[in-house]
Image (cartoon, rainbow, N blue to C red; front, side, top):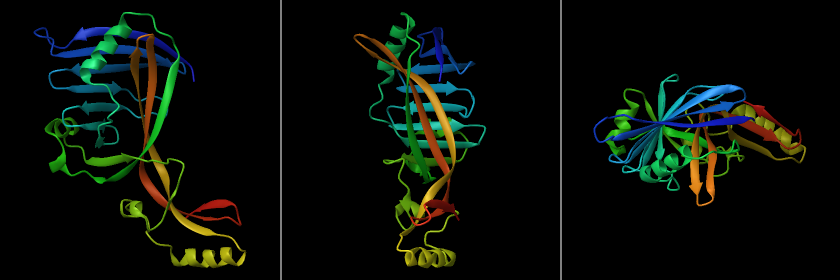
Length: 243
C-alpha cells in the first residue's frame, strides 16, 4: 500500500481563547486523497477524528472522551454508533496536541505503520452507563457496545459466552449438524460447531506518535464484526461449511 503524507494545516475553531484546536492533513493512499480532520479540546478533555469513506473503509467520526473513559465511532451511512472503553494506551488530548504541533513544524517520512484489530458487537449499550458527551455525539443513532477480540484468528465454539451475544444464530448444533457429526465421527474425525463472522465494517484513521528522535505515523484500523453466523468443520473433509 502506497502513502504520501502532506502535513497539517492548523486552524482555531474559536477566535476567543481558541477552545478547540483543529488540524487537517491529507494522505494519498493508493492514489486517492484522504482528508482527515482532528479536533482537540483540552478543556473538555476530548479528541474527535473525522475520516471520509474510501475504498473498503467506512466513513467514521471517532470521539475519545478521556474524562468519561469511553470511545464512540459514529457511522452515519450505516446509521449506527459503536461505543467501547477507552484504550488506556492513548495519549491525552494535551499530549496529542503537542505531537500534532511537533509534526506540523517538521518534515515527515512517508512511511506508515498499520495496526489492525478485530472487534465484536456485544449488544445494545447500557445508555445509563454512558457519559453525556458520548450520548450527544451518537445522537439518535442506535448505540451498540463493542469489545476487542483477544484472539482474532480463533473461532468460538457454540455454547460459549459469545453465543448469547450473536442474535440470529443458533447456540446449539441443529439436527442436521448431528447427522454430519455422526458421519464425521465414523471416519475417526472431529466435528465442531462455531461462530464465524459473516460481515465486517472497517474503520481506519491516522495518528502520529512522537519520540525524542522523531514522529511515526500509524494507520489504525478497527474491524467491527456486526453479523455472525454458525459454521461447522469436519477435519476429515478439511473444509468449513457455512450453515
